[in-house]
Image (cartoon, rainbow, N blue to C red; front, top):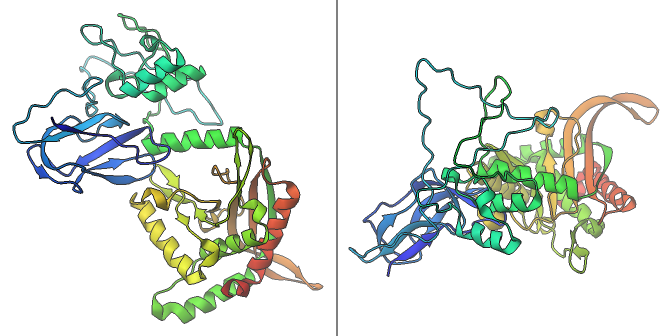
Length: 426
C-alpha cells in the first residue's frame, strides 16, 4: 500500500501552507531524509522531508497551491503500485489565472483594502456551488471541527482553494465573525464595491500577523512607559570597538548593544521576564532563562528571531548571532526553534528615523521594548546647554504580569546600562 505524504504543521500558528515548488517529480526514486518540496508557512519557507523509501507514484498538489494541514501532497510506494484517491476529496489545485473579459464588457471595479483608519465593510465571498452529486467540499479537519462545535458546514462559504471549507471557516462561523453564507443554486447579486484600487489576498504570513496582533492588542491590557536616555556614551564606545575590531570583520550595531542591555536589565528585574498563563489555574510563569527576540521586517510581514541565553553571551557573540538570524529571516530560512521560545522582545525602528513609538506585545511575552532613533538635541549638562545625543526607549507592558513600578524599575536598570555601556563588556 502506498504511503501518503501530508501537509505537516511546520509552525505553532500554521493552519495552511503554500507549496512553493516540488524538488522531485512523479517517477523519481526517493529515500527517507530526501527533501521533496519547498513549503511556505506563516513564518518561513521550509523544505518538506520524505519519511519513506520508494518512488513518487502520484503528486496530488501542484506547485502554487495553498494546502490545509493534513491534506495529501503526494504518494510514495513501489513502481507500478496503484494509488487510491486521498481521503477528504481532491486536493487543492493551483489558482487559475483570471480569464480576460470580452471587449464589449467593462471590468467591475475591484474592492479596495480597508484601512484601520477608514474601515469599510467587506462583502462575504460568494459560496462555491457544491460539486455534481451534492458532495460538500470540506477538509477532514474542518469536518471534524464542525461536528465538534455542532455547526452545519453546508451553510458556510469556503475560503480555501476552489471554495473548499477549511478550519478557519469553521472557527469564524463558530465565533459569529466568519464568512458564513447560505449556499444557493443561483448566484446572488454582488454587493457594490468601492470604486478604484486593487485587492490583494493576504499571504499566509500576513494573515497570521494580522490575527496575532489583533489578539494581542485586544486581549492583553497594554500600558506604556518611556524614558529618554543619554546615548552619547554608547555611540562613542561603539565607534571605538568597531575601529578596534574592524580587522576581525566585526561591526557592532546599536541594536546589538540594546539586545545585550535588555538581557542584563532582565537580570536586575526578573519579574519582566515572565508570561501570563490563562490556566486553569491562571497565573504567572517566571522564566529561568533569558531569550531575547528582535523584530525583523521581511516581505509581507515580520518575524522575531531569538537570541537564546542572551544574558550569558558576549556583545560580539550576540552581534554575530543576530546578524546570522536576521539574514536567515529575510531569506525565510529560519528553523522553528530559531523564532520560537523568546521571553522578551526588542523592536527597533531607530534606523528608519522614527524617534519614538509604542510596540504591540508579542505573546506570550509580558513586555516589548521599542527603540527610537538617536537624535542630536540641546541638553543641559551641569549648568550649560550643550548638544547631546538622546534616544527614547518605550516599554509596552502586560498589566496582568507587570505593574507600573516594576516596569519603571526595568527601564531604570536599562537606562543605567545604556548610559554606562562599558558595564556590558564585563
